[in-house]
Image (cartoon, one colour):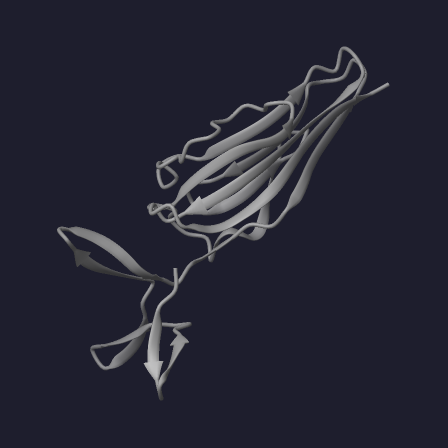
Length: 175
């Protein structure tokens, strides 16, 4: 969401909004206005960032479950999960800087491949409360490869897409 001011006859985007408080300047993180009886955000210091990526996992035949997973966390951090169960934060993705994700919505659309776990097709309005998790798993009792290509879109609750990316989940059992 951007804020513009008119300066010398042309509009310029505001990068930082500040307010003078008790003699010192402080950065404003969010600014809201009441419009037709409801509050609407018109400025946020956070930016919403997603980039196309591939999240992969593999396990040997007869090994543990192979799983590729991506989490849009409630604290504004994008995380991927490795086979050993460890999470890896993807720096600068989802909300930058990371912070409460209240007010943002996520929509996932399966573009091709196997349907992973997760909610698809509808805007999910509870990002500020809970993580949205998408996971593709494969039993390692037989060889093979699974892939899911998912289009993720994020808005601020108004249907205007702020960012989008195709994220591919792959998982395989190696013979």
